Image (tube, rainbow, N blue to C red):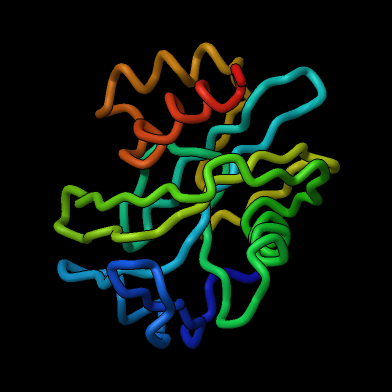
Length: 178
């Protein structure tokens, strides 16, 4: 599997969420990360469990942190759904079905222990895993299929899971109950 390319571009955004250009992904994630477009996805299996992943230790932001199934950035002019499918294959080696946009307006800013900032407009998707996992070790160091209640409980321990997942899970709970 191929990890992130060094020339991968992210879409920069103004405060209203409008595209204002692009920058190399390798250049934007630091202590002054500009607002940019991303996505999060939660994968479910046939038993209704959700996939949690632990970010590889070499990740620039939030290394070693447990989080949602996978995240990524759409390329300029790439449809968001295509980006989700692309990253599912690249990070987890998995095909997805039943892809649904659940939280279209999610936005967050978080700072990791090393001072790297995540600053993203980050629509949140849910999908079903349609094939076995084959995770890229440069992206994912561990994974676990867990019942939704276990993930919900992890959000009560913000040191145990990524800050974006801590914010997203209660919103997903509300969306799932509608």
